[in-house]
Structures are given as C-alpha cells and as structure tokens.
Image (cartoon, rainbow, N blue to C red):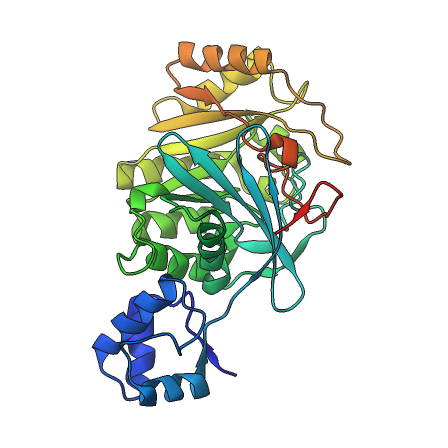
Length: 346
C-alpha cells in the first residue's frame, strides 16, 4: 500500500522522506504544497522530477469527496457531507462569526456513545478517521468557501479521545505554520469525558482548549442520558477536569444540553454549581435541538436563561449557546448521515 502523506506532521513526513533517501528540507517543501491544496505531486514546482517519480511510486495524497453542501438561509452556516474512500460518510459544519470563520469537524465515522439527545451516534460507530481525513474536512471547506478558517472545533461525529493518536497528529498539522497555521488557543477538542484522553491532552497540548460534554448535575442522571460515557464515575471525571485546569492553567468548558424535565430544573443548577465550585471552568448551556426519533422534549430558551442566572448566582460562569445552522440540522447534536430533499448538490 502507498503511504498517505496528507495528515502526517512535518516531523513524521521528514522521517518518511529520510527513509527514501531524501534530505530533511524536502519535507518542508512537500508539506507546504499539501496544505496549499495540492492533490498530486505533479504541481509541486520546486521539487525534482526524480523525487516526484519516487513519491508517485511509494506515496499518495488522499482526498475525501464533497458529496453535498447545504447552506443555512438564516446565518450562512454550511453543512457538508463528505464521502470516504471505503464508502463511509461524515459531516462537517462551517460557521461564520464576527471574529472569523470556524469549522466543526468529525473525528470518527459514527459514534459509540449513544447519547439519547444526539443524532450523531444513532447508527453506532463505523471506524475512526485518519489524520488526513480530519484535516481534509478543513481543506475542502476552505476551497468551497474561498475563505480562510481560523478556528477548529473537534466536536462533530465521534469521540475524539477514542481516536487519540490520529487526533494528536491532526492537531500538529493544523497548528504548524507550514500547515494551516491555526494557533493552539484556536483549537478546541470536545470529549464525552474519556479520562485517559483528558490526562494525555493536558500533557501534549496544554495550550489547546478542552470541552467536556457533561450534561448532568450528577452521575445517575448522566448514566441515563449518556449510556456509554456515563459508565465512568462522575466525580472521577470532575477530578480529572480539576487536575487539567490546575496543570494547564486553562479553563474547562462544560457542555450542558438542557432537556425538559430531565436536567433543567433549579435544583439541578444548584447541584451542578456545588460540584463545579472552585474549578476554573465555564458552562455552555445548550437548549436541546430537535432530533428525529429521540424522546426528550426541547427545553425553552427562557428556561436556559433562568438556569444560567442560577449558576452565575453561585459564581459559576455560564452562557447560552447561539444555535447556528439549526434550520439545516447543523446545530449541536443534530449531525447525522441522512440525505433529504433539502440537500443541494455541492
């Protein structure tokens, strides 16, 4: 099999080219071309014909295929359906903000977590994505929009810390100034609470941002809403988050989907505040979005604001998330592999 060069960090690419008898500077040349959008070796004008031939024999630059793109009429959010080489598919969401453009990418095809309020894992987990498949979501969105992406959130389909090795290589590529040049503080990884991943992340990427999908004020409610992630002890997870904040000096963002009658009452806010007290953190409240086939009823925005005020009264910083792309099923928890008549050809 040919070696896929897309998604390799500069250090890994240099090591690979060294094994082919090439000088280290060649890696910088090839690396730069790949993240300028090159999809073949022929267009790499500053490398020799002999090296091009060698790379063609041994290597490839993989690419995912943009199958469809759907654009929100309300806020310009774009949701992409990308096809993978093995027939699987993934989704990504491009969002426009006053501070620049961001993208929410997937780290796996499918998800094993089975959260009851989320559409992304309805079909279960197919497989993890390669670093190249992760970074190509960004490259394809930039090419389609003609605009630079300055922030990336790994919060699409999948549990990133179930795919930690490939996630780490992806982060190195997008952070590299010869790659996509995105600063660590503009990179956010969201986890359902894989403790070993949180611990590794705090060591490997202390300047990046960590978001934890908590969604409950205690362990029993969390087990009901997040069957797989909820198997981990709630207080052990919070302890790992406290240690992350202490070690890195970075706050933890807790994602909290408000589901009517399940976790959105004043007593839930008070219990959550008590469990988070003293931690460098922030709570991002998300009024639950409509998900076909899911039982929980949406929580009202007014209730979200009351919940927020309750947390703030206990000195826990909180915000209510703005729901971008909800009219195209691109908001939090809505990504799923379905093609409807509302999709338009990309």
